[in-house]
Image (cartoon, rainbow, N blue to C red; front, side, top):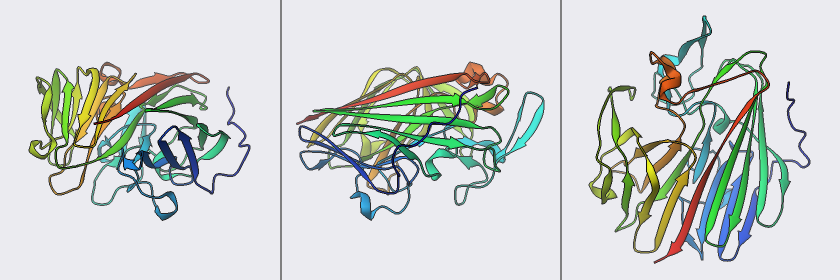
Length: 292
């Protein structure tokens, strides 16, 4: 069985990486989140100076482990046993986004343009199975790539989902183009109910009203405004798009499974993974950034 990595340095201080005119600020202690990403001083993600950040939720991006989005009514059945999760999101009857985004991570390695951080989870009321997950950030001139490596430290298979939750600034001419095939409609609490055709998205963000999980994601998601042109790609096959009308941001989230997949008749058919004891899975996300 794998054992948690040993941190080589404390994680209580921000990390900053630079490559060309790209700057990445990380807060490992705040859920392993990205505080900010800038190109030539222009915010690529919703960005805040790292020392001003007090939690991961207002950050530029945070990890979704060991599940994405909502886990219905904080309970699930796995391998014939019932399990519960604890409340972790104000106003929701569900648990949301896993556990890693609300826990401190440790720094394993860091250099001028790369860093690796880790979170080791012991079973608790929020998730009943042990695991370790690592994020590796690689900053290049014009691009950021983030890698996940997840290891199951439990003595039996556990259900696993991975994802990232990037927030993008909603500017005057923000536009989103994504090739997709299907959208999951949701009930009033945000749980998916049925799949319907979705012939892609190609519109100004100000005209969109989505809080949905999408299937059939092909190619890179393209985001463009008056300042930057972005290409978001990932090894993960699903996409959550959130475009709140009253906020100055929107979200385009690469994820491994349909929201609440663990409650579906065949969770593995909807992207959830059953990871054997001692085994692991990985994923990546890449954001390419060009000036307009």
